[in-house]
Length: 214
Image: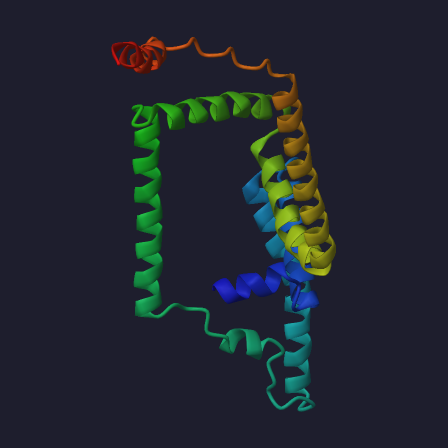
């Protein structure tokens, strides 16, 4: 499952990825105007407007004995998309672990298990209120889908240039930090001299007393 997703994200099969990406974007954009049920039914009807006539055409050829009973979609019908028992158990375990972790983390944040993390969570929720006022969840989903199919490919194509830009940015930040520290140390007032301790004069007077005694 993960390997197939990576193949789609990195456009290793351009035709398959193009179909999936276009279908997702068009389907999500259609939900803005229509309900999910309407969009799903129209997509299925549009697909069957193509598959059904082709199936009837092959059936007609079979009746005329011009086709030896070849099904146009036999490869799709023979494709086994079911999960084995082991894969099903592993998938269910991963889903349960993910849900359990999310519930435990939310409980920790809501009931102030860590003050710092809870403050960050409050700030995030406050920012999300502005995001929700400016846009909808569906817009964010469409943006996430476009980013998922574009950013990994862009990084793969421009990997050397992006790494060079990252190194340049890090060097600039380091240089700026060093300059600020040097300016701070040059502007900072010099520390006041420490008062002379009383032990030092006493220690200096001790040899004099010994000299007088002699």
